[in-house]
Image (tube, rainbow, N blue to C red):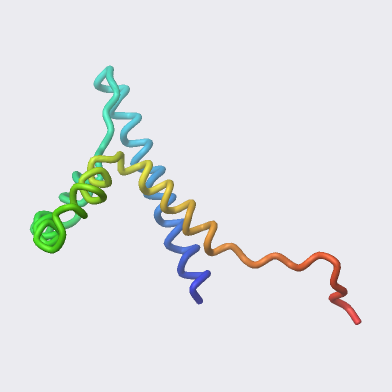
Length: 106
């Protein structure tokens, strides 16, 4: 069940990352310069009211955690985060390999 869930989420994140990559590419061509969409813009678009609460709660609990992990991740391109996380989930959800050297038929 975990493998199935990991593969489905991996495929969805890979598809979303590819869509973000195509969107950034089209926007870059139209503007005659490199334009990337940071993850913070995607989070703000998907959840308009709750995007600031994540930063506030992380800074309230551990300010070093926000500056070490939260800020660099939100400034990273959304396409790379989606493609990378999707690839990791697909790798985790792949079926196990058959052992070599064992007879499978009696």
